[in-house]
Image 1 (cartoon, rainbow, N blue to C red):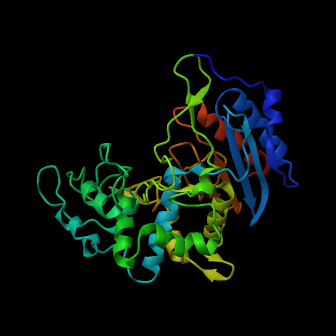
Image 2 (image 1 turned 180 degrees about the vertical axis):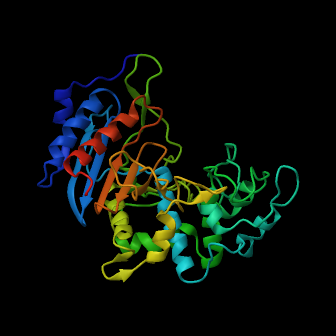
Image 3 (image 1 turned 120 degrees about the horizontal axis):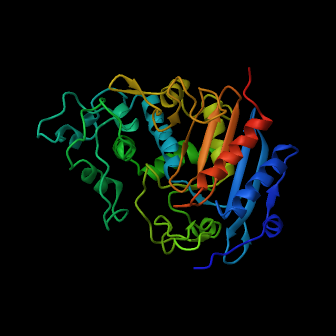
Length: 381
């Protein structure tokens, strides 16, 4: 199979940037142009913000290789598990209001959680809590994929997640999975609102994240960057399937708190700045400092520190989550290689948007981006 090949000069011709007066932009574009020429991505949108100001925001490469459409800075991406950070922040607004508790038995709001069993048929030694659900320490096994995935409501899907025996005692181990989906259902029960509506009211609307949605309309869909994978024969990139991009706007997948959002680099920067600014946006508090601290500190399982908080990937207290970032840095990645991180010591936000699945060397592009950021904005002493 012949791959589509673009020489670096042509790639440069398709580079479109919202250029801030910063040495970052040409350095990042040069690095990513090389990565795109090496077929590590078709196109990328990158954003860097420091001290609350965007100092770099650029689009490099193509959003559609077949039509030779340039990537644009307002391109829309399926952000997959980056959704978890927004979902947990939404849930934490209910914790702030006293409507939910992190450490009470979560069966108080979702009775099905009180019926779960271990593989030996016995009930767990202690109840599952909301903290367990949002730190992936509840013991809920990763579900098998089914043809019905996405076809029902969050209300209908949650009991399915709880049918299988627990993989381990709550709090004793870590297994990345769908606990945040269950937490989203609890938020629906407590608030009396669908989770997408709740997030819109609590976060997306107040922050002006108008390009972020679980169910993108026709206008947003027209800006979705196409998904690519490495060709099985001959190398290079070929189009890939994205199950979250439905056939038309009227066909909706289930609202998925663990990974259903579509967004842009600029919108995600708004959310990250809220977190970096202690939960305050335009003078209005959207989430408490206490909740942010709970979400972004490494949690423990079986007495051992994790590289995870509540809906956020973190360092483990000894080692930074990303090379060159501080030990206090936190963020989240997505299944199709999107990535956003906050380094509070540098008051720094980085966003990397791409649509890669099974791309050989795909991680090299993100590393090249971070390397240029760290070179220009080294960690503060």
